[in-house]
Length: 277
Image (cartoon, rainbow, N blue to C red; front, side, top):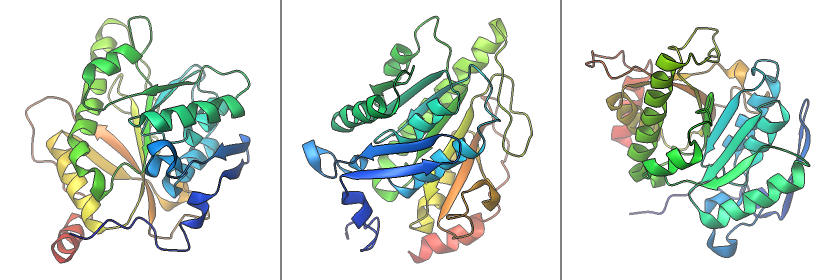
């Protein structure tokens, strides 16, 4: 079995830099300290393209986010996207990661970039449903937006079930809360409305192998999610049209007896690619 190569040299170089500075039209400058391989950290010790794509999406759509909205980031790494989320107006931001070393690094970056903020950085194991309850105790609303960057890659396949279970739990709880106290939902990118109370789920992905998406889509459909790719125009111009970076919205279909869900438009192509990779 060959090792998973995430990027070919020399693209690895920015990942090992100690300091990276990012500029956003609305959010301004964000300076991130990277710690590649330090304190036992793995890939979470650097900023990857998918995180930057997600941060730019939040920044470019800053007028779209409702005042007082809350957001939860899964697999936040060093905290870039959550820092931008705080700057574009989300009033309650939780950045989470499953690596304790990376959580410590993210806290430092949040403190360095946000003078005063309600942004929280926390350890979260996707398989620990009780941990989600601890993050959102009674009185703290479940997130309006859930986002994640670069969590679909072959090395993480074992955790996909935990990720989708966590998202399902969030959607169920939001819908249950809707029954007792109406929850607002942020509109999808195409302007259509989600089910009452459903969170907006954004997933930023860097394509490396076609079979990654193929198997993730398959797992998502089993959990009653559809995965909708946003148009290239949603991406920063540097990434739009390169065929490598993509933003998805996950949409939960609920617990009703599953009907035959429509296949993803490019599933047949992915199936062929999966068979050949």
